[in-house]
Image (cartoon, rainbow, N blue to C red; front, side, top):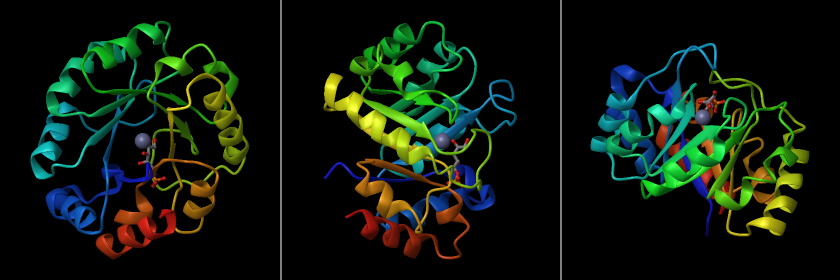
Length: 218
Ligand code: DX5
Ligand code: ZN
């Protein structure tokens, strides 16, 4: 069906990471989203390949590693070894985007490019035919639990047009402020991968919320 619920473990309770992840698996999660922050490209620090490797031991689900770091080319191998199935890098801090996208694909996994809220979708015209997915940030990266930025819908429409023209197989991922109130309309707007942090892990019932979100996109 090409519609995937991707819980973002940034919002999980790290004291009980295994339990929280397994609850999303019970609820029907499709892909686990791992947010990597370096305190340079974004104003926050999260975790590195060791934690991704632990997540890989907790579940067989594919891992989607979102790199919010400078010089991502220096870390691709480490995250591939840790078990990443998808790796995305940002457009904004990459002088050699084409090279790093090829580096990810040459590792045998799926490669994505990410754009921040203020980055124009049309900037992707030269890279779109080289990627497996595009991640549109619907909040400014760095923190979970922020409010969805509403002009993201226009960006999704523009992106869908670009995809139809240059790379029809390319998937659309959305990240930030996604929950029960907007996931259905995002799905109707052709989004394929839905990153959900706070809406799942802070809901009070991780498994039930995951399955409710999944129903809304089915
Ligand atoms: C933000 C991260 C997101 C974040 C989303 O920089 O890329 O993946 O965890 O969290 P929510 O769903 O809480 O907005
Ligand atoms: Zn993310």
